[in-house]
Length: 208
Image (cartoon, rainbow, N blue to C red; front, side):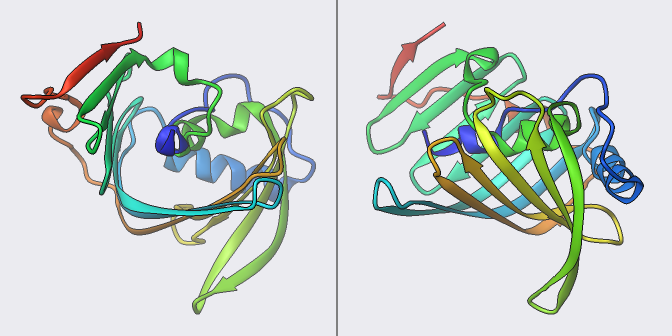
């Protein structure tokens, strides 16, 4: 599924970081993406796998409000109200409906940004300059030896701890790169953003 990428790893007791700088950066990022955060951005996703000899690219826009989110690409729309997830595959004229908790094994950027501090230990790496922008770098390793992902690297803006890039490596050595742009943190987002009405002529597949 393209965008379980944008939804899955984020709430519980804070694990100690190996150094105070990493701990502070982790806390700053976690505060930026708290339970009440509203967030919008454009994104690009690049997925590569040497084993599968694959190279895939996706782009679109996302909206986040706490546990609710909306992700739109050219061929797919994913909407969650925090309890349910609707995945509309436009070309197939099909909507898959499932419980949000059933999507917990895939990488979700949305969920990850709200829970990463509970599932990973962290180390701050040297600052990185990308496209003339200085970014703070945080490298994360899972506390669970059976975790789905080997490592996650996050790059955040120093001024507001907003994450603009991520690199995720899973246990099959699939590498996912995420780039976020046009970031905005509005005070409110309409309720309708996180509701999904099934279009006429589209099949509903209920997986609950």
